[in-house]
Image 1: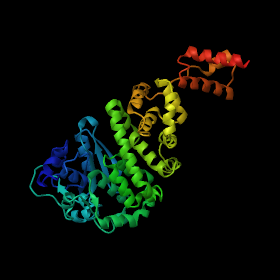
Image 2 (image 1 turned 135 degrees about the vertical axis):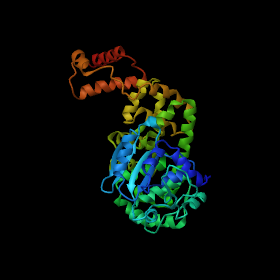
Image 3 (image 1 turned 180 degrees about the horizontal axis):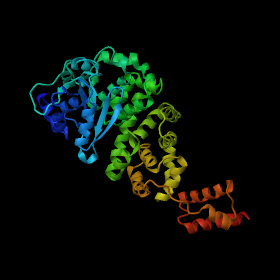
Image 4 (image 1 turned 60 degrees about the vertical axis):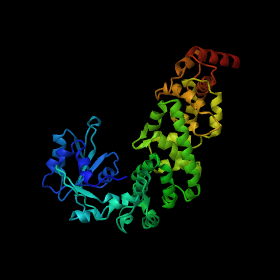
Length: 434
Protein backbone atom coordinates (compact mmCIF):
# COMPACT_ATOMS: atom_id res chain seq x y z
CA UNK A 1 0.00 0.00 0.00
CA UNK A 2 1.38 3.42 -0.98
CA UNK A 3 1.67 6.35 1.37
CA UNK A 4 0.56 9.80 0.21
CA UNK A 5 3.06 11.66 -1.94
CA UNK A 6 2.90 14.53 0.59
CA UNK A 7 4.67 12.34 3.17
CA UNK A 8 7.59 11.38 0.93
CA UNK A 9 9.59 14.56 1.51
CA UNK A 10 9.12 14.22 5.27
CA UNK A 11 10.28 10.58 5.17
CA UNK A 12 13.40 11.44 3.20
CA UNK A 13 14.29 14.38 5.45
CA UNK A 14 14.08 12.11 8.49
CA UNK A 15 16.98 9.98 7.22
CA UNK A 16 20.39 10.62 8.85
CA UNK A 17 22.35 13.56 7.35
CA UNK A 18 19.69 14.46 4.76
CA UNK A 19 18.64 17.75 6.41
CA UNK A 20 22.28 18.83 6.56
CA UNK A 21 22.76 17.98 2.88
CA UNK A 22 19.58 19.87 2.01
CA UNK A 23 20.95 23.01 3.67
CA UNK A 24 24.20 22.67 1.69
CA UNK A 25 22.20 22.28 -1.54
CA UNK A 26 20.16 25.46 -1.09
CA UNK A 27 19.71 27.21 -4.45
CA UNK A 28 21.58 24.44 -6.29
CA UNK A 29 18.45 22.98 -7.94
CA UNK A 30 19.15 19.50 -6.50
CA UNK A 31 16.65 16.65 -6.71
CA UNK A 32 16.36 13.25 -5.09
CA UNK A 33 15.43 10.75 -7.79
CA UNK A 34 14.70 7.11 -8.38
CA UNK A 35 14.66 4.27 -5.92
CA UNK A 36 14.59 6.30 -2.71
CA UNK A 37 11.29 7.93 -3.72
CA UNK A 38 9.85 4.61 -4.84
CA UNK A 39 10.82 2.96 -1.55
CA UNK A 40 9.54 5.90 0.51
CA UNK A 41 6.17 5.57 -1.22
CA UNK A 42 6.13 1.85 -0.43
CA UNK A 43 7.39 2.42 3.15
CA UNK A 44 10.40 0.20 2.48
CA UNK A 45 13.90 0.67 3.99
CA UNK A 46 15.97 3.26 2.12
CA UNK A 47 19.61 2.26 1.76
CA UNK A 48 20.82 4.87 -0.73
CA UNK A 49 19.88 8.27 -2.11
CA UNK A 50 20.50 9.39 -5.69
CA UNK A 51 20.84 13.18 -5.85
CA UNK A 52 21.14 14.96 -9.19
CA UNK A 53 22.18 18.54 -9.98
CA UNK A 54 22.01 20.82 -13.03
CA UNK A 55 25.80 21.17 -12.78
CA UNK A 56 28.82 19.24 -11.48
CA UNK A 57 28.18 18.35 -7.78
CA UNK A 58 31.65 16.98 -7.01
CA UNK A 59 32.93 19.76 -4.76
CA UNK A 60 29.66 19.86 -2.84
CA UNK A 61 29.82 16.08 -2.33
CA UNK A 62 33.38 16.35 -1.00
CA UNK A 63 32.38 19.18 1.34
CA UNK A 64 29.41 17.15 2.61
CA UNK A 65 31.69 14.20 3.33
CA UNK A 66 34.19 16.36 5.23
CA UNK A 67 31.55 18.09 7.34
CA UNK A 68 29.72 14.88 8.26
CA UNK A 69 32.82 12.63 8.69
CA UNK A 70 31.91 10.47 5.71
CA UNK A 71 34.05 8.92 2.99
CA UNK A 72 33.89 10.26 -0.57
CA UNK A 73 34.96 8.38 -3.71
CA UNK A 74 34.38 8.33 -7.44
CA UNK A 75 31.81 6.09 -9.07
CA UNK A 76 32.47 7.39 -12.58
CA UNK A 77 34.92 10.26 -12.91
CA UNK A 78 34.16 10.90 -16.57
CA UNK A 79 30.46 11.33 -15.78
CA UNK A 80 31.26 13.21 -12.54
CA UNK A 81 29.39 10.66 -10.45
CA UNK A 82 30.56 10.10 -6.88
CA UNK A 83 29.42 8.55 -3.60
CA UNK A 84 29.57 9.42 0.10
CA UNK A 85 29.28 6.63 2.65
CA UNK A 86 29.27 6.52 6.44
CA UNK A 87 30.29 3.83 8.91
CA UNK A 88 27.69 1.26 9.92
CA UNK A 89 27.12 2.88 13.32
CA UNK A 90 25.76 6.00 11.61
CA UNK A 91 22.79 3.98 10.28
CA UNK A 92 22.88 6.26 7.27
CA UNK A 93 22.06 5.60 3.62
CA UNK A 94 24.75 5.98 0.96
CA UNK A 95 24.58 9.24 -1.02
CA UNK A 96 25.19 9.21 -4.78
CA UNK A 97 25.86 12.54 -6.51
CA UNK A 98 25.57 13.14 -10.26
CA UNK A 99 24.80 15.91 -12.76
CA UNK A 100 21.59 15.76 -14.82
CA UNK A 101 21.77 13.25 -17.66
CA UNK A 102 20.15 15.83 -19.94
CA UNK A 103 19.74 19.63 -20.07
CA UNK A 104 16.56 19.58 -17.93
CA UNK A 105 15.10 17.50 -15.13
CA UNK A 106 12.23 16.38 -17.33
CA UNK A 107 14.58 15.09 -20.01
CA UNK A 108 16.69 13.40 -17.34
CA UNK A 109 13.68 11.46 -16.06
CA UNK A 110 12.81 10.39 -19.61
CA UNK A 111 16.26 8.78 -19.84
CA UNK A 112 15.67 6.46 -16.88
CA UNK A 113 14.68 2.80 -16.90
CA UNK A 114 11.20 2.33 -15.46
CA UNK A 115 8.37 4.72 -14.63
CA UNK A 116 8.54 3.74 -10.95
CA UNK A 117 12.14 5.01 -10.92
CA UNK A 118 11.44 8.15 -12.98
CA UNK A 119 10.19 10.32 -10.13
CA UNK A 120 11.96 13.21 -8.42
CA UNK A 121 11.49 15.52 -5.47
CA UNK A 122 13.39 18.76 -4.70
CA UNK A 123 16.05 18.42 -2.01
CA UNK A 124 14.89 21.15 0.36
CA UNK A 125 15.10 21.55 4.12
CA UNK A 126 11.42 22.51 4.33
CA UNK A 127 8.41 20.41 3.31
CA UNK A 128 6.01 21.80 0.74
CA UNK A 129 3.00 19.75 -0.30
CA UNK A 130 2.75 18.19 -3.76
CA UNK A 131 6.35 18.67 -4.92
CA UNK A 132 6.66 15.17 -6.37
CA UNK A 133 7.74 15.34 -10.02
CA UNK A 134 6.17 12.34 -11.77
CA UNK A 135 5.88 12.98 -15.53
CA UNK A 136 5.37 9.31 -16.46
CA UNK A 137 2.80 8.43 -13.77
CA UNK A 138 5.18 6.15 -11.90
CA UNK A 139 3.13 6.52 -8.75
CA UNK A 140 0.06 5.17 -10.54
CA UNK A 141 2.10 2.22 -11.81
CA UNK A 142 3.27 1.51 -8.27
CA UNK A 143 -0.30 1.68 -7.05
CA UNK A 144 -1.36 -0.77 -9.77
CA UNK A 145 1.67 -3.07 -9.27
CA UNK A 146 2.88 -2.47 -12.83
CA UNK A 147 6.47 -2.42 -14.10
CA UNK A 148 6.60 -0.24 -17.23
CA UNK A 149 9.66 0.77 -19.25
CA UNK A 150 10.14 4.48 -19.78
CA UNK A 151 10.44 4.24 -23.57
CA UNK A 152 11.05 1.98 -26.54
CA UNK A 153 14.84 2.31 -26.22
CA UNK A 154 15.01 1.50 -22.50
CA UNK A 155 16.68 -1.88 -22.96
CA UNK A 156 18.55 -1.04 -26.15
CA UNK A 157 20.51 1.69 -24.40
CA UNK A 158 21.31 -0.52 -21.39
CA UNK A 159 20.40 -4.25 -21.61
CA UNK A 160 21.23 -4.76 -17.93
CA UNK A 161 17.94 -2.98 -17.24
CA UNK A 162 16.19 -6.20 -18.34
CA UNK A 163 17.57 -8.09 -15.33
CA UNK A 164 17.17 -5.05 -13.10
CA UNK A 165 13.52 -5.03 -14.09
CA UNK A 166 13.16 -8.68 -13.14
CA UNK A 167 14.79 -7.92 -9.78
CA UNK A 168 12.39 -5.00 -9.22
CA UNK A 169 9.43 -7.22 -10.13
CA UNK A 170 10.68 -9.95 -7.79
CA UNK A 171 11.43 -7.78 -4.78
CA UNK A 172 8.60 -5.24 -5.13
CA UNK A 173 5.89 -7.60 -6.34
CA UNK A 174 5.17 -5.63 -9.51
CA UNK A 175 4.34 -7.25 -12.84
CA UNK A 176 5.91 -6.26 -16.19
CA UNK A 177 3.21 -5.01 -18.53
CA UNK A 178 3.01 -6.80 -21.87
CA UNK A 179 4.92 -4.30 -24.00
CA UNK A 180 7.74 -4.19 -21.47
CA UNK A 181 7.94 -7.99 -21.33
CA UNK A 182 7.98 -8.25 -25.13
CA UNK A 183 10.78 -5.68 -25.28
CA UNK A 184 12.77 -7.71 -22.73
CA UNK A 185 12.43 -10.78 -24.96
CA UNK A 186 13.51 -8.87 -28.09
CA UNK A 187 16.53 -7.24 -26.48
CA UNK A 188 17.78 -10.12 -24.29
CA UNK A 189 20.69 -10.92 -26.63
CA UNK A 190 22.09 -7.48 -25.87
CA UNK A 191 23.23 -8.84 -22.50
CA UNK A 192 26.44 -9.96 -24.18
CA UNK A 193 27.54 -6.31 -23.97
CA UNK A 194 27.25 -6.30 -20.16
CA UNK A 195 30.09 -7.28 -17.82
CA UNK A 196 29.52 -10.60 -16.06
CA UNK A 197 30.10 -8.96 -12.68
CA UNK A 198 27.11 -6.63 -13.19
CA UNK A 199 24.89 -9.47 -14.40
CA UNK A 200 25.68 -11.80 -11.54
CA UNK A 201 24.98 -9.15 -8.89
CA UNK A 202 21.48 -8.70 -10.30
CA UNK A 203 20.94 -12.47 -10.41
CA UNK A 204 22.08 -12.77 -6.78
CA UNK A 205 19.51 -10.11 -5.86
CA UNK A 206 16.73 -12.11 -7.53
CA UNK A 207 17.69 -15.42 -5.92
CA UNK A 208 18.08 -13.83 -2.47
CA UNK A 209 14.54 -12.43 -2.49
CA UNK A 210 11.83 -14.05 -0.39
CA UNK A 211 9.72 -13.83 -3.58
CA UNK A 212 12.26 -15.83 -5.58
CA UNK A 213 9.54 -17.94 -7.25
CA UNK A 214 8.28 -14.85 -9.06
CA UNK A 215 11.84 -14.09 -10.20
CA UNK A 216 12.46 -17.62 -11.46
CA UNK A 217 9.30 -17.50 -13.56
CA UNK A 218 10.18 -14.07 -14.95
CA UNK A 219 13.66 -15.32 -15.89
CA UNK A 220 11.77 -17.84 -18.01
CA UNK A 221 9.08 -15.61 -19.54
CA UNK A 222 11.61 -12.86 -20.36
CA UNK A 223 13.97 -15.48 -21.91
CA UNK A 224 16.81 -14.21 -19.69
CA UNK A 225 17.26 -17.64 -18.09
CA UNK A 226 17.38 -19.27 -21.52
CA UNK A 227 20.00 -16.79 -22.71
CA UNK A 228 22.21 -16.69 -19.60
CA UNK A 229 21.99 -20.29 -18.39
CA UNK A 230 20.69 -22.72 -21.00
CA UNK A 231 18.08 -22.96 -23.76
CA UNK A 232 16.48 -25.61 -21.53
CA UNK A 233 15.91 -23.23 -18.61
CA UNK A 234 12.21 -22.62 -19.37
CA UNK A 235 11.60 -26.38 -19.50
CA UNK A 236 12.79 -26.84 -15.91
CA UNK A 237 11.74 -23.49 -14.43
CA UNK A 238 8.68 -24.85 -12.60
CA UNK A 239 10.74 -27.73 -11.19
CA UNK A 240 13.27 -25.19 -9.95
CA UNK A 241 10.49 -23.13 -8.35
CA UNK A 242 9.26 -26.22 -6.49
CA UNK A 243 12.77 -27.07 -5.39
CA UNK A 244 13.54 -23.58 -4.12
CA UNK A 245 10.29 -23.45 -2.16
CA UNK A 246 11.11 -26.83 -0.63
CA UNK A 247 14.61 -25.59 0.27
CA UNK A 248 13.25 -22.55 2.09
CA UNK A 249 10.74 -24.72 4.02
CA UNK A 250 13.46 -27.14 5.11
CA UNK A 251 15.82 -24.35 6.11
CA UNK A 252 13.06 -22.68 8.13
CA UNK A 253 12.49 -25.95 9.97
CA UNK A 254 16.23 -26.31 10.54
CA UNK A 255 16.46 -22.75 11.90
CA UNK A 256 13.68 -23.48 14.38
CA UNK A 257 15.63 -26.49 15.63
CA UNK A 258 19.01 -24.75 15.50
CA UNK A 259 18.94 -20.90 15.22
CA UNK A 260 22.66 -20.65 14.37
CA UNK A 261 21.72 -21.83 10.86
CA UNK A 262 20.36 -18.35 10.07
CA UNK A 263 23.87 -16.91 10.33
CA UNK A 264 25.28 -19.66 8.14
CA UNK A 265 22.83 -18.92 5.33
CA UNK A 266 23.61 -15.20 5.45
CA UNK A 267 27.40 -15.65 5.46
CA UNK A 268 28.97 -13.85 2.48
CA UNK A 269 31.07 -16.11 0.25
CA UNK A 270 32.12 -13.16 -1.90
CA UNK A 271 30.74 -9.67 -2.41
CA UNK A 272 26.97 -9.83 -2.86
CA UNK A 273 26.87 -13.65 -2.79
CA UNK A 274 25.56 -15.30 0.37
CA UNK A 275 25.92 -18.95 1.24
CA UNK A 276 22.17 -19.45 0.72
CA UNK A 277 22.23 -17.86 -2.73
CA UNK A 278 25.28 -19.87 -3.80
CA UNK A 279 23.55 -23.13 -2.88
CA UNK A 280 20.30 -22.17 -4.63
CA UNK A 281 22.14 -21.01 -7.77
CA UNK A 282 24.09 -24.29 -7.90
CA UNK A 283 20.98 -26.42 -7.41
CA UNK A 284 19.17 -24.46 -10.13
CA UNK A 285 21.89 -24.94 -12.75
CA UNK A 286 22.60 -28.55 -11.77
CA UNK A 287 18.92 -29.30 -12.47
CA UNK A 288 19.65 -28.39 -16.10
CA UNK A 289 23.10 -29.98 -16.40
CA UNK A 290 25.35 -31.18 -13.60
CA UNK A 291 28.40 -29.63 -15.26
CA UNK A 292 26.73 -26.24 -15.82
CA UNK A 293 27.35 -24.69 -12.36
CA UNK A 294 31.12 -25.13 -12.61
CA UNK A 295 31.26 -23.90 -16.22
CA UNK A 296 29.26 -20.76 -15.51
CA UNK A 297 31.12 -20.08 -12.25
CA UNK A 298 34.32 -20.07 -14.30
CA UNK A 299 32.85 -17.84 -17.04
CA UNK A 300 31.53 -15.40 -14.44
CA UNK A 301 34.97 -15.40 -12.78
CA UNK A 302 33.70 -16.16 -9.30
CA UNK A 303 36.26 -16.37 -6.50
CA UNK A 304 38.33 -19.53 -6.09
CA UNK A 305 36.47 -20.33 -2.86
CA UNK A 306 33.08 -20.03 -4.56
CA UNK A 307 34.14 -22.12 -7.55
CA UNK A 308 35.54 -24.91 -5.38
CA UNK A 309 32.33 -25.17 -3.37
CA UNK A 310 30.14 -24.97 -6.48
CA UNK A 311 31.98 -27.83 -8.16
CA UNK A 312 31.54 -29.96 -5.05
CA UNK A 313 27.90 -29.03 -4.41
CA UNK A 314 26.89 -29.76 -8.00
CA UNK A 315 27.50 -33.49 -7.48
CA UNK A 316 26.18 -33.82 -3.92
CA UNK A 317 23.01 -35.93 -3.96
CA UNK A 318 20.85 -38.14 -1.76
CA UNK A 319 23.56 -40.81 -1.78
CA UNK A 320 25.83 -38.30 -0.05
CA UNK A 321 23.15 -37.83 2.60
CA UNK A 322 22.91 -41.62 3.03
CA UNK A 323 26.68 -41.74 3.54
CA UNK A 324 26.34 -39.37 6.49
CA UNK A 325 25.05 -42.28 8.56
CA UNK A 326 28.53 -43.83 8.49
CA UNK A 327 30.28 -40.69 9.79
CA UNK A 328 31.28 -40.65 13.46
CA UNK A 329 29.30 -37.97 15.32
CA UNK A 330 31.99 -35.34 15.86
CA UNK A 331 32.94 -32.05 14.26
CA UNK A 332 36.39 -33.36 13.28
CA UNK A 333 34.91 -36.43 11.58
CA UNK A 334 32.41 -34.32 9.65
CA UNK A 335 35.15 -31.91 8.56
CA UNK A 336 37.27 -34.81 7.30
CA UNK A 337 34.28 -36.20 5.40
CA UNK A 338 33.34 -32.79 3.97
CA UNK A 339 36.89 -32.33 2.75
CA UNK A 340 36.45 -35.36 0.49
CA UNK A 341 33.58 -33.54 -1.24
CA UNK A 342 35.60 -30.28 -1.51
CA UNK A 343 32.69 -28.42 0.10
CA UNK A 344 32.81 -26.19 3.16
CA UNK A 345 31.29 -28.17 6.08
CA UNK A 346 28.54 -25.61 6.76
CA UNK A 347 27.56 -25.40 3.08
CA UNK A 348 27.55 -29.18 2.86
CA UNK A 349 25.29 -29.59 5.89
CA UNK A 350 22.90 -26.91 4.59
CA UNK A 351 22.72 -28.69 1.23
CA UNK A 352 22.17 -32.09 2.83
CA UNK A 353 19.26 -30.58 4.76
CA UNK A 354 17.35 -29.93 1.54
CA UNK A 355 18.20 -33.08 -0.42
CA UNK A 356 15.82 -35.63 1.10
CA UNK A 357 12.55 -34.82 2.83
CA UNK A 358 12.36 -38.41 4.07
CA UNK A 359 15.35 -37.74 6.32
CA UNK A 360 14.20 -36.04 9.57
CA UNK A 361 15.44 -32.49 10.09
CA UNK A 362 16.56 -33.55 13.57
CA UNK A 363 19.33 -35.61 11.95
CA UNK A 364 20.84 -32.52 10.34
CA UNK A 365 20.18 -30.36 13.41
CA UNK A 366 22.17 -32.77 15.58
CA UNK A 367 25.26 -32.06 13.45
CA UNK A 368 24.94 -28.26 13.41
CA UNK A 369 26.56 -27.44 16.81
CA UNK A 370 29.45 -29.79 16.03
CA UNK A 371 30.07 -28.20 12.63
CA UNK A 372 29.68 -24.72 14.10
CA UNK A 373 32.36 -25.51 16.70
CA UNK A 374 34.89 -25.83 13.86
CA UNK A 375 34.67 -22.02 13.45
CA UNK A 376 35.44 -22.32 9.76
CA UNK A 377 38.80 -23.99 10.37
CA UNK A 378 39.99 -27.32 9.05
CA UNK A 379 41.31 -29.47 11.93
CA UNK A 380 45.00 -30.36 11.96
CA UNK A 381 45.94 -33.96 11.26
CA UNK A 382 46.65 -36.19 14.24
CA UNK A 383 49.91 -37.19 12.54
CA UNK A 384 52.36 -35.12 10.51
CA UNK A 385 55.16 -35.71 8.07
CA UNK A 386 57.87 -35.40 10.73
CA UNK A 387 56.40 -38.24 12.83
CA UNK A 388 55.92 -40.44 9.76
CA UNK A 389 59.54 -39.92 8.70
CA UNK A 390 61.02 -40.41 12.18
CA UNK A 391 58.88 -43.31 13.45
CA UNK A 392 58.00 -45.20 10.28
CA UNK A 393 60.68 -44.11 7.84
CA UNK A 394 58.06 -42.91 5.34
CA UNK A 395 59.34 -40.21 3.03
CA UNK A 396 57.41 -37.49 1.25
CA UNK A 397 55.46 -38.88 -1.66
CA UNK A 398 52.61 -41.29 -2.46
CA UNK A 399 53.16 -43.49 0.59
CA UNK A 400 52.96 -40.54 2.99
CA UNK A 401 49.73 -39.48 1.27
CA UNK A 402 48.32 -43.01 1.76
CA UNK A 403 49.29 -42.99 5.44
CA UNK A 404 47.57 -39.67 6.07
CA UNK A 405 44.49 -40.85 4.16
CA UNK A 406 44.34 -44.00 6.27
CA UNK A 407 44.16 -41.93 9.46
CA UNK A 408 41.60 -39.52 8.03
CA UNK A 409 39.31 -42.36 6.96
CA UNK A 410 39.66 -43.87 10.44
CA UNK A 411 38.65 -40.51 11.92
CA UNK A 412 35.55 -40.40 9.74
CA UNK A 413 34.45 -43.84 10.94
CA UNK A 414 35.30 -43.11 14.58
CA UNK A 415 38.07 -45.71 14.81
CA UNK A 416 40.57 -42.94 15.60
CA UNK A 417 39.73 -40.12 18.01
CA UNK A 418 43.12 -38.93 19.25
CA UNK A 419 46.75 -38.54 18.30
CA UNK A 420 47.68 -41.64 20.31
CA UNK A 421 45.08 -43.77 18.54
CA UNK A 422 46.30 -42.46 15.17
CA UNK A 423 49.88 -43.41 15.99
CA UNK A 424 48.81 -46.88 17.17
CA UNK A 425 46.78 -47.44 14.00
CA UNK A 426 49.72 -46.63 11.75
CA UNK A 427 52.17 -48.65 13.82
CA UNK A 428 49.89 -51.71 13.58
CA UNK A 429 49.29 -51.18 9.89
CA UNK A 430 52.95 -50.91 8.89
CA UNK A 431 54.04 -53.68 11.30
CA UNK A 432 51.55 -56.07 9.71
CA UNK A 433 52.79 -55.05 6.27
CA UNK A 434 56.30 -56.07 7.29
